[in-house]
Each structure stands twice: as C-alpha cells, then as structure tokens.
Amino acid sequence: MIRTMIVDDDALVRLGLADLLGSDPGIEVVAQATDGVEAVDKAVAHRIDVALMDIRMPRMDGITATARLRALDHPPKVITLTTFDLDEYVYNALAAGADGFLLKDTDPTEILRAVHLVASGSAMLHPTAARRLIDRFHHTNRPRAAAALSSIEQLTPRENDVLVLLAAGHTNADIAIALGMRESTVKAHVSRILSALGVTNRVQAALLARDAGLTS
Image 1 (cartoon, one colour):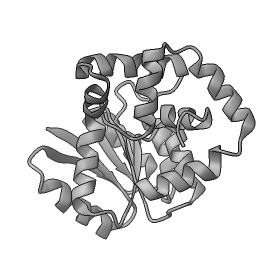
Image 2 (cartoon, one colour):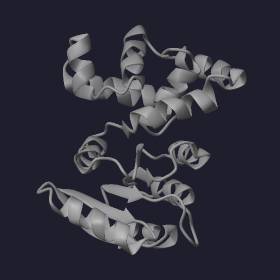
Image 3 (cartoon, rainbow, N blue to C red):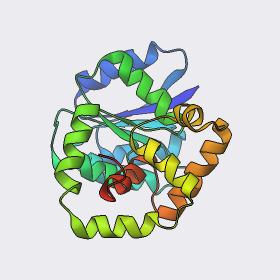
C-alpha cells in the first residue's frame, strides 16, 4: 500500500485527487495539507511514501516544501502537480528534489501510474513540458555542462549506459531488458550513479546527463 499526501491550497483539487487516488486499491491517502508548512508537519506525523505537491501556495510554496520534505529522516517521494507548463518554478521544484512533475490536466490514469512509478523508485515527467523545460534551462548553459561532464567521468562504461537510458525516461525494468541485466542489478547501478553524481533522485541525474550532452 502506497501512503500518499495531497498538498494543495484549493479544496476542490484536494477533493478530486483524493477521490482519484482512493479509487486505486494500491494507494491510500493518509494526509492532506493546504500549504507547505502543514505538509512538512503531516509528513513527519504520518510517514508518507509519495506527496503530490502544488507549487503556488500561501505561507510555504511547493518548492520550499519539497526541499524540506526531502531533508527529513524518512523523506517521501514528491510529484509536483502544476498548471504552469513552462514555469521556471517547475524546474526549481525538480532541483529541490521532486521525483517528477505533471500538469493538473494530466489524464487521471497517468497520475495513478506516476504514483506507482515514483513509489517504486522511478521518475515521471510530463513528456512535452519536460523536454521544453530542459531545453530552456540546460542546453545553452556551458559552465553547467562542463560540471556535468566532470561528474559523469566518474562512472563506469556500464553505469554510463544505464544513465543514458535513465535520462531518456526509461524505468528500471526497461533498462534491464535493453541492457540484458537483472532489474536488481539496474537498481544497484542507479544507486551508484546517484551517489557518484551527488544527486538525490533520477530526475536530477537525468538533467545532468542532458547537460553533458549524453541525450538530445
């Protein structure tokens, strides 16, 4: 059972998401919060697995809240849900440690799929928005690209292969099939990659890979 928390200052959004998540027998909504301050308090109290996080909220926004949640002793995974397709706040949320982002008009089945994927250690990004966002913030940043290349030089050739597929959005199962590995071996490689690159999740690793020009 995936223990989830909904964080949004709009009561109707919270109600709709609670109904959606409650329709999945593998997901349980154990907490709801109206802003980031409340989200951090409830995450400590309820041991959340996945938080669905709005960005623009009073008192503490979703970006700050994401960073606070990821710094907890038992950090939940975070999926940012936003209405702002190319808003720089989305990139900042990913940099703060979010494991993915979706637009609020995403098909409900994809939102449920995202919760399961993120809970299992994968990432979930809205494909069109992700590509445009990464292009905007990364491809023209040469100092960042140089730093990314330096970090990636620490990886073995096999880890580099895994990183390329990870950055393209493939799950651990997809990578295992593509590279002829066990899924447990892929997970071990991913853990090593995150540690070597000094990042906390797959999204940040993917951004580094794109900075370094490993993917288009």
